[in-house]
Length: 400
Image (cartoon, rainbow, N blue to C red; front, top):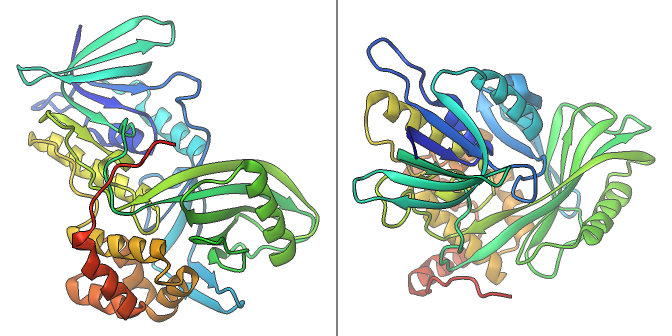
């Protein structure tokens, strides 16, 4: 049994961001002892992926940023364009390998920090207020840790009950073209000229890193992921028919699934006062958009401040209750088909000032601003949906 102050389970964006922010020691307050547990190579370790977010000024992880932009563009199904300048904010792209390398360098030789490659089995709250973490390392050896508190970023074993449950699922190609076809100053945030599915919506997403290079994704909001072959067919159609990029080499691919749900995410594990959920497991994914990285940073910073101050480090709710309610209405309206998804998102970006919309997506708008945003949506279908939500039961997903 090893005694430590803090155990961080998982070394994705949430776990690494928290470990990166946890304080070092001072003469008056020694550094907390921290164990960061990451899964060994294998199926539990996620593949390389890309995270995007918007931020004003220089950011903590800027050395790992692949590219950033001041211009965002939406394209309607008919080709209509909305172009938005978001300065002084910038839309930033970080690849997970670069992020992990930066954090690895900063954490190397940090006093009081130990990194452990292991598969966590159980996290158990004990009667004395401590938490026991049982794990198995890469060599098959059992490891047991006793900690004052645990921050767990692993997805729960059973998804929480929800009224609406959609998935944002996608596949992307990193491409290099023969001709200079991309505008490196502009991100195509949502291009609805893709073939629309029978249920939900789809769009293209283009992150240009040069005139000849970009990450091009095909994304759907819908009930089920596609096969890799189906994604590739849609990407082929989008890049050839819509973007007309011509001859191109696919350098690498990435694929993922992000939950879009109005489930309640508990920030404390059930039955424990000192086991906390962080990242997507702690509600950091914005239900209406799938963005997670920025909210995970806000969570990590709040926890680190509490640790420095000697307070209970309960992760804050990543988004206020009003934002979660508006997300629930939007998801239900999309899932029932009461609103046209491409039209709704195009209308929001066309009619809401860019800075206000970004604050809204971060959950930082005031009530009058939220009402102004809501007025730019199809009001009657949204009001009907809001009226029925309190009467809808929350259900766990059925097994397939």
